[in-house]
Image (cartoon, rainbow, N blue to C red; front, side):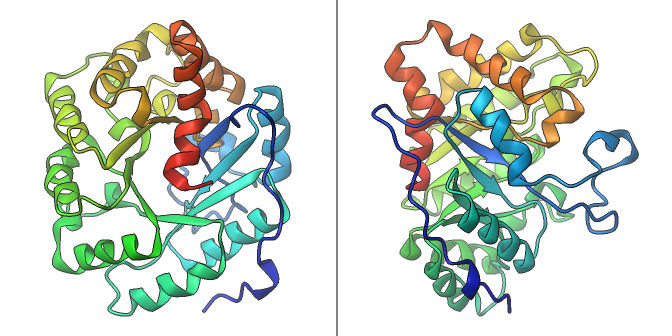
Length: 295
């Protein structure tokens, strides 16, 4: 069992008169070649450590006030690492961690994490599961059904082939806040937006308890030849499906570095939303994340 007693968060939130701007999806890790084997040889730029001190100046340069850090390893040791980071840095507003949702004792683990107010929710790497419909299994659904009573959110990390299962999944838990990571990772690299993906996104967005992160889009594009116009049809689709009030900004740093700098990622969405009202921009770049994750 992780020992986090020395890492209880006590910092105050970053404040200001205006709505804080939030990067709602980024990662920290101390690189381990075995544990982090998903970082392949074509991703050498991120085969190293990434800590809060590396991110803070990038956030400041982009006018971002705080962030939500998301698990990248499926272990409770990961939670210990991320909560410790959050305890030491006020700009880390929340953590999305990992628990074994299929464990019969998961309720006790969720109760235990109530000690750390910066633990906001949980995620499972569903995209990597051999059973593509794992989210619909009784054991997994039992775990999901316990989140709401503790006030926890759930991040849905999937590939497009799993969107059909998501509709049944989210329908089963109408009071549970869900958020789709990386717009469900469509095949942007192919530069051909499929009606199947669009229809599936719209079907899921019909459930008002489901939100979506505009994050990770450059990672799914051609890393070396992407252009903003390649991404626009995908952004158009999720804006039309979810509306600005259920979309949040996420950089997916440092994973985004395989294709773009932090500044480039931030500029993509700043340019895209530049014609939206100031209220809509405030919502997308901060207000929605604050509301969803209770930051």
